[in-house]
Amino acid sequence: MILPADFDFTQGNLQDYLDCPYRFYMRYIKRTKWPALVVGDALEFEARGQAGGRFHRLVQQYMLGVPEDRIDEMADEDPNNDLRAWWDGFLSHVPPWLDGERWVETTLTAELADYRLVAKYDLILSDSNGGLTIFDWKTSQKLPRKDWLLERVQTRLYRLVLLEASPLFTGGGPLTADHITMNYWFTAQPQTPVALPYQTSTYQRDRGDLSQLIEEISSSKPSDFRRTDDLKKCHFCIYRSHCDRGIEAGDLGDFDDFNIEPVDDPGEISFEALPEIKF
Ligand code: SF4
Image 1 (cartoon, rainbow, N blue to C red):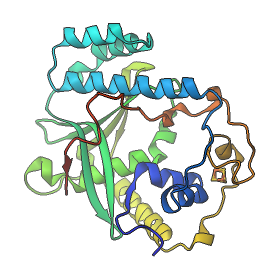
Image 2: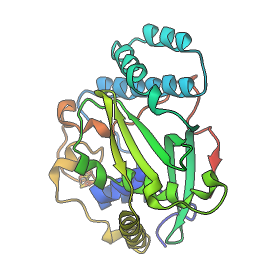
Image 3: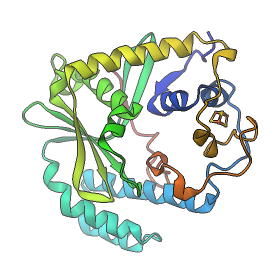
């Protein structure tokens, strides 16, 4: 078996495998760090990730009951002017959607193909009708298409893991898929989240596809992890000089900023430190 014994599958590492099996091999099996930038404008890239992280912290504090005027002050004092506008957009539109029990920054796990799937949620809302809604806050500048979001590993994995873990929320048996919706809320389009309701047929398809993918990865030999043929993936990959796929990093303007991860600032509450709920 090529994977480390304690290996967990996440939306990040599965998406990496789909983007380029060799990148997955370098990053998660060889654990090779490579001194290259993801995009040319490294400082702006990092600043965007940190601003996204600070916005997530504001929302988290709001969900946990920190007074709104205190959060307003933090938004006003933020070095990135976008944060104030993002926060205004959130306050203007999101609170009426938040009726129900809130599970803030929660990690859930499920078993699939003898491996553990791990999903980290910004918010899960449990409503009085027995529905569960996932909210994922996105600060990316580009708005992706709905059909693109539906095929992302994040969408497929998050809904599947929540359905499998649903007895935790019901206190009884599992829900059916139609009780679950995933909402992507974008700061660039605050008035309407992109709502992706789940269906039993989609759950069955995702379960089959993800099982197959995990079995394929876990049974692969090193030589099976092929380099992608899609050279656009290499423009924003730190291994491009190792792979002889160019030296210059791609332009930040061309980068799919949906993939910029929110970064925790030092001193803030750590996402990783929050408790995990096991299924
Ligand atoms: S540079 Fe291209 S081929 Fe090499 S790991 Fe990255 S995405 Fe894959």
